[in-house]
Structure formats: structure tokens, C-alpha cells
Length: 321
Image (spheres, one colour):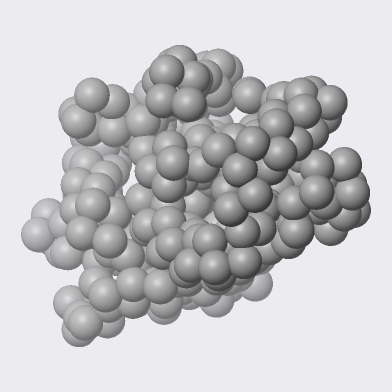
């Protein structure tokens, strides 16, 4: 049986990562394992920024956003020689297995390390919900609630001035945050990579709304990267429809905040399950939530899955127009 495991967070931070760290540490200790925290992701692994964790190390972190292990990106980890150095560092600490919390890129690093003799398990930590092997990622629910809170506040001034508000939310190339927040907020339009609407149709619809009722307001939720210049898009809408139009980019406020109860519980379930997998001697796996059950996949299999898990909600949005 293994005796020492490590844990790191990689890529963008997400609320709930600390809960996953706590679960891994507590579950590992319950098996009699030594648990080591690796700071600053794969970069910290290469640099040997590693410290043993105990129960006290993870006390009072359940309500904290971000990650106590900090995080970083290391594109160079794709290089086999860089990974070899990482393996050597792990071996020098006697660390036999690793839990990696992050997104797709972090998963690939975990799979490659497994192929080099260090069993790894990936946990889906990303606000974007862009990992197809799980219904929900750690941090998504908290981010979604943050967006809804922001939109509620923007709605007040939108209604007061009879404006059109275009609100850009995060998600990278995944439209789940826009899709879910738009549905929750009753947005007049939701624009995502999976649900693009031609520009002429957007203008036509908004102009009809404006001309039919001068007191009408409109809220559009837009996925980031869909429009390279969201301010220019807002100016176009104002020019073509008559709506006084404003664009709001919510930005990194979406990443922060105390994790929701859902994210705390999800992270705890996934973290404990990851330790179970490593104790069983398995690696190259990633953990997911599917139909409210915690499951695991081979990482290559998970990365090959199509990202269309919530597209069915588009039909619901059409019905509620």
C-alpha cells in the first residue's frame, strides 16, 4: 500500500478547491497516509515547493475561496524532460501518488505522470464547467450564483433607465455559465458558442421590443470571447435599435467568494473518492459527478467526450421566450 500522497491545484482558481484539499488530507490521514501539499501547481512541483500537511493545516478553510496551495500555469510541463524532473522531485520526497485539481490541461499532466510511474487522479476544479466527464465542476455553482447576484444588481439600473444591458460572463469556450445564468435571470437573449444568434436577428428583435414599448428593458447574457469587442457591440445595438445600451464585463469577481454549499459538498465527495482510487492502486483517472453519483473515468476517455451536456436546456429557453 502507498504511504505518501501529494496534492496540487493547477490552472485557474475556483471556489471549493480548499474543500477538496481538506477532503484529500482528511481522507488520506484516515488511511494512515502522509499527505503533502504542492504549492503553485506543476511549477511548484518542479521547484520542490512541497510541505507536509496535517489536520491543522486544513482547519478553517471550508469557507474560503481560492486555494491555500496557490496555483499557476506551466505550459512547459508538456515537455517530457520537464515531467521527468517532476517525477524526480516527487521521488525525493517519497511521494508515490498525486491528486491534481484543475481543468483539462491539468488532467493531461496527471495522465502523463501516471504513465511515468506516479499514479495520479484528477478532480475537476474550474468555474467554466467545461469538463465533459462531470455534470458539474468544483466552483461552477458558486460562480453561477455570483453572476446571478451581479445581474440582479445590474437589472435595477437597467429597469430604472429602460436600457439594454449586455453582460459578458466567463466560461472560456464553454457556454454553461451564460446558459444557466441567462435561464435563471430570465434574460431576453443568451448568446453562447453553442447558441449563437445572427447579428441581424439580435438587432431586429431588440428594435421590435424597443419600438413596441418605450419603457421596455432588455438583458443579454453573453459568453466571453464570443465578441472580441463587447463595447463596440453595445454601441452597434444602441445605434440600430434605439435602446440606451451598456455593456458590463463581470471579470474576475466571478472567480472569488466563499464556496456555495453545493460546491463544498461536491468537493468533499470528490476529494475522498480520489484518495480511495489511489489507495486501490489505480491512476490516470479523473473523478466526476454523473446523475448525482461520484464516478471515475480514464483521463483520455474523459477528454474525448463531447461537451454538449447542457445543450438540451436551449429548448427550455426557447419555450420560455
